Amino acid sequence: MEIVGVRVELPANTPMMLLKETDGDGRLLPILIGNPEAASIHAAMQGIRPPRPLTHDLLCSVIEVLDHRIERVTITEIRDHVFMAELSLVDGDGAQTSMSCRPSDACALAIRTEAPIFASDDVMNAAGQSEPATADEEEEELLDEFQDFLESVNPDDFLA
Image (cartoon, rainbow, N blue to C red):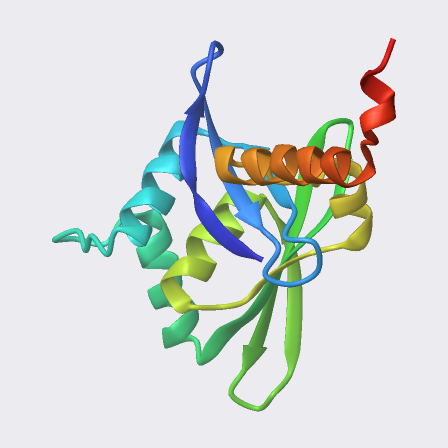
């Protein structure tokens, strides 16, 4: 998965993180998140470095100082319309540790550390959405349908 961005979902004025499959069908995964997490993700995506570390920057530093690295982030399930995620860490000896977390926090950390982001098949099947067709795709589909019509039309079809 890759983070496409964050945006405000109207009319509720709620921030949303948008992830996209990098393989498979390229489905989108929208996840509603909080304002601070949206700001943190957006800042990291823009490469903005605050003069003093904010919460996600600080946590990345703590993980590094403790000789760990973020191996991956996985959005694991949806419970009662709430997304769950798992943060997988590896220490200097290769020992792995996983912990439950919010997808927004996990993705804010993943952006900063360039850790890969995954979503389970169950999550994608339940909440993944196909990308809406663009105007060019719709136009191409319409032209294909018209071409099919022209190939199948017979002059006798117009005689009354």
